[in-house]
Amino acid sequence: ETIYQNLIGKRIQGAPESVHLADFPEYREDRIDIELEQQMKLVLDIVVLGRAARNASAIKNRQPLSEILVVSEVKLSDEYIGIVLDELNIKNLRWLEGAGELLDYSFKPQLRTLGQRMGKDIPAAQKMLSELSGRDTMAELNDRGFITLEIDGTAYELSTDDLLIEEQSAAGYAAESNANLTVALATELTADLIEEGLMREIVSKVQNMRKDAGFEVLDRIRLYYEADTEIETMLSNRNEEISTDILAVEILKLGDRSGKKWNINGHNVTLLVEKI
Image 1 (cartoon, rainbow, N blue to C red):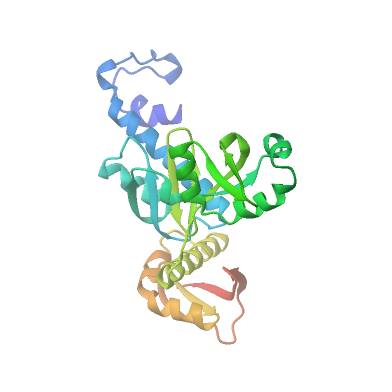
Image 2: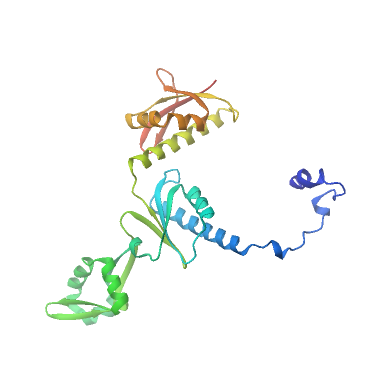
């Protein structure tokens, strides 16, 4: 009702007094944009899987990552890629034709089918399977339909029914999939990415402190800090960017002042905000 009054009721002469007295809007088929709906559906699916991958690898959303890899028959237009990157705090999106480089596999014998056939050779088979290249073995299974293990002169042909196959993210990636889509986050953190992640955490903590102190949105502050060398270097390198985000006129050492203690990605930091 408030939205209606602000947008229509008080502005358009002759409009109904209340939204509850207005006719329900008529369906306008010409306003349906199928491409927009499909693109935004794909954006949502990628973001949901990307967040699941972050959660699985215990990487906070405030920690920027270098790249997200996406396997999908449908591709996003450039204007929608930016939404994905902003939502997931990632620098770049790269499309892949297949998920091969994103996934790895491990294999164990399926005792239900192999127990009687292999008997005493089961332990040896288990050891051999654990030493196989996951991707190469999966490719062979897909190509031939079976793999061959030779144990003490006996050759065993094992199909997918004879194997317990576990799928996992390849080293350096956190991957998640649904029926139509696979996404993987590059989880390697460079020094620059780590520094930017620390900066975002500091900014978040300061914004919370501003709010708790009852400062107005446009109030200027001084930020005082006490921290280790890594945090101090980051504050020096990114002084201008941090100052802009938190409306600080200065970022200074804490000295003999007292502030609020935080643990920021394993670093003990004390912060004090002072309104100008």
